[in-house]
Image (tube, rainbow, N blue to C red):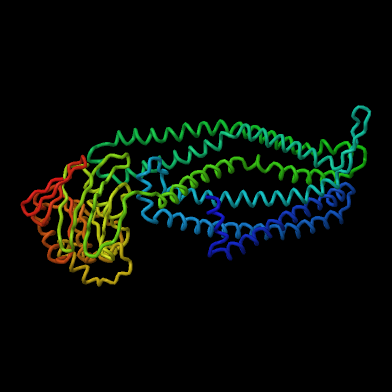
Length: 565
């Protein structure tokens, strides 16, 4: 995952990425350099105050104004470059994840995995944004603190001079003792923070999943609003939502306790550090070895060194959240790249003008056999009706023939370069114009508007013709019967050689269903129809019938003859 994220700097967007990164680094280095000048500025300023030098005081204020002007301008450009780089990185990473998610129907296959990554929408939409923003902020912060540590450690080393300590009648000289004190103080604080705050990383990970599950529950109510209203299931849904929300509350309470403990430590650590430099430098000041301005310069330099060394303590909460989203994205990424590498014993080959299966056995993800050693052949222009009890594997058989169901043995020979269209029981309509919904999944729109209108009229959808160029979520606006007739209109427009109908007329009355199949037979006279259905009336529109029993068994009925396996 980290390697994929960093490959942004090796992609086609690399020139802009490197330019933005270099400008960001330059701004960061310049800001640290300006802060060092401001710290050095304190020497003259406080000395002028101590000496009651009014002219020196005003001169120091002019210097301060010039340094701050450059600092303010640089800070603005640093923010600009950081946000622009963040936007471009997020755009690239989101594009890569979407491509992986949609490649080879990975979004479908992930649903079949035993431990499938939950809420891929949240991982792509939110986790990537948090990962990118926190990665840049933490990296930029680390760079800034490293530059700060190098520059101000040199300043502090020079200012602190030497200190002599007597130990067992032996005098030990410590050069740059203030630097060593700062290092010791920061190491102790960092170790204590890591010990107390370690659970926060796991808690952040769990909380991200809890939040995503709660949002998913809210979306489901919106999606199934009609069903819930008809069932009067409001009490049930409220209980379910509150139960999901209680997981958020429970984890957040644990996070509160951990964060409180970390805050106690970090606040005490920060407050003590404000006087720590004065405390350890005070002997030299009271011995008249330092002036007031030099004392403030030492305190300022110490503060910057201490701040750099305390970076982990100050950023612990953000590091914990970054670690959580990084783990979620890594889990998601690993599942996505493993899906195309799965090996199955079944094979799908090409064959001209025929759909053939040989010893085709289809299984459920848990290993249950749905269809056992099915051997059949369907020629172009032929028709086949698949029937059987609910759950017997009818839809799974169509998904296997479509190449999206991976759990099968045997061989499938599918027509090469054939135009194939699958019409599921619940049609999918993209958000857009009604014309785009009919033409889906084709985007070029080469079919004339008049042709689409004619087909809608044929499918008894004349009332929708005035709205062909109206954008809406049509799957929410139309009834199930209208959606299924629109699906049939899509088949007529595309003129596929092979049409697979998975209970595509289940929400249409039998009279209209008969008219729709007659229309398909007329407009797709040279095409093959393979249907799934429960109504016996569908047998009139198919030459053969394949009956599944749900235990792996099957049989064919053809022109009144019965062939059993």
